[in-house]
Length: 296
Image (cartoon, rainbow, N blue to C red; front, side, top):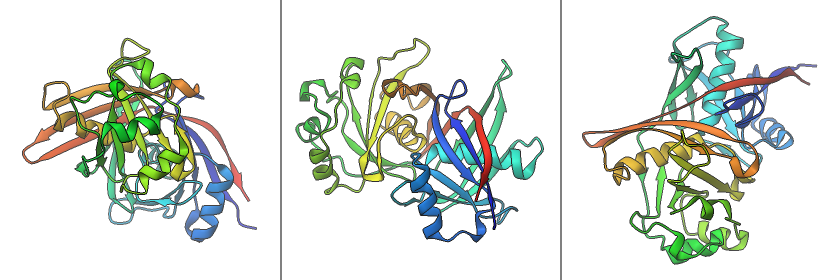
C-alpha cells in the first residue's frame, strides 16, 4: 500500500505550537482530487496542501491547496509552510528561494536570516485587486455583533484580493475586535451577495507594543469559524492600507498580530508600496516543524 510523507508546520509563529497549523502532504501526484479533499476534511486544519511534483516545472513546484470544504486557488500560510517543507524534504540544501505553482499563478518565496539569526520566509503575492465598496457599516455591524459607531468610517469596507478575496473592515479599538461574535445567519446572508466569503477586521491597537495592527478573520463558508493567521487576507490588507493611505504614506512595513483571541498568537510581517499604477505586496513570517510522519 502506498504511503505519503506528511508534515505539520506552524506558520506565522514566533515559537513552536503557535501561529497557524498546516498539514503538507508530499508524493501526492497519485492522489485524486476526491482523495485530497477527503484527507483535508479528516485533517480539519484551515488548509492542507498537496505537493504533486517532486521536481520543478516551469520554475516552480506544483501544489494544490484544500480547506475542509473545497480547493482554493491561493492561500498565504499554506504557501509559506509548503515552501518550507519543499526546501527541507525535496531540495534538502540551503537555497535563497523557490516558487510554488498554484491555481492563481506562480508565487515566489524567499528565505531571509535576520541580524538576530532568525529565519523569515517572504512571499511576493499577486498585486491586489479591489472589488465592491458598497457594503454599508449598518449591514456589516450586525454580522459582527458590534455597533456601527465602532467601525472606522474614515475608510471604506471593501472587497480586496491577492488571489483569495476577503471583506476588509476597519475598526477603531482592540476592545471591539476582542468582543466580536459572528452571527452566522447574518454572515451567510451577507456573503450571498458578495464575491468575498471571509470577513477580515483590523484595528490600530495591539496586545504587543512592537506590533502595529491587530486582526481577526472569520470564514465559516470555508469551514473555518476563525483563522489564527491569514497570509492572503493580510496581503489584501497591505494593499488596502497603501491604497487608502491609512498611515499617510505610499509605502509600509508593518507587523500584524492575529490569533490572540483564540490562543494561537501569530505574527505576520507586511511590506507594500505603490509602484506607478500597481501596489506590490509581500508577506513574511516564521515557520516551525511540529510533526512528521507517514499517511497510509
